[in-house]
Length: 166
Image (tube, rainbow, N blue to C red):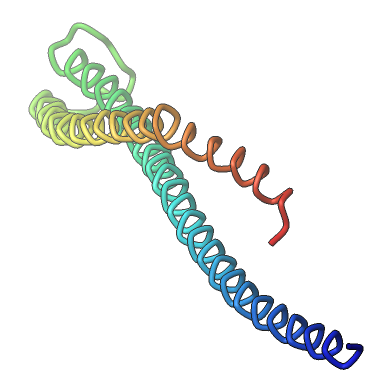
């Protein structure tokens, strides 16, 4: 009788070890699947954040260009207006007494042409800035309205599941 009990016990132990091996295989598959899913999720989150970051960097770059072009346009506009006033005789300048009227008109014309060129560049820079502003706003809206709630939900679930160690 003792031999039959030992035989049954060893049979049960072998059966339990087989079940334990199957369970460990399933747990390894589940753990690998979980790690793969988490890696894909974090890669996607990183991509979304880099996208928002790059649009904000582009916005900052176009803003600097726009302000630079706009300040240059204002400076040229003031200089062109002053040169035009001097050439037309509305404003007197000590230097203008020693320069011919045709030379003053030529200088005013050159500054007027340069003013037009700078205003065109400034308008282009302003349009680029407005477009990058709209792009950055759209990226941030997309991120905060749709992506961030999904990320928060994932972390809440992740916190729940991380308490159950596998």
